[in-house]
Length: 247
Image (cartoon, rainbow, N blue to C red):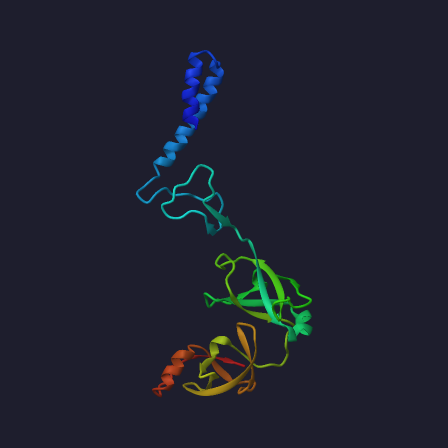
């Protein structure tokens, strides 16, 4: 340590084994180390010492546990900046012929309700497999995107693959749907203060909007927000004002 080196240098100087110049350099190193130690010691509390990462990012792994002793130079943790993440979708083999139509994707992490759009995150399609792996009947499709700051690396997600746009279809926001025993319903606005519960059959889904293949016609107005409140009110025959939208 710097202190041992300094004590040894004092003895060597007395015996004229080292020069005054060499001793002064050792003394300066010792003073620098002692000042750094004193600064760290002032931060020690009953809970230990606070360690600050030299970079911003996410704690990927911790290499020491609570209360463990550490030595100089021992790694404590791995911090990852994760500026770019990858999104991996696994597609059943039967859809192999359609993979070339994929352009982008939306996804919803399993730990939240937010739907992220790769188009908003500077995302792009990296690659897709030409065949399934030996141990699985699925074909991987890989995307890359910027981390929005609240996306957990390694988390599972529901992925909505996007291909070419569809014309002349009826769709509603996901928020317009209510589910009962596997069936889906929307609330049609019949006039200012009257709504009708309407069963619908669903098609494709991009995470934000869902295709309706039966149950609605062009021009129908449906409640898009506050569906749960309308559903509750329907059981008591009191229908509150909802937010409707033309489709």
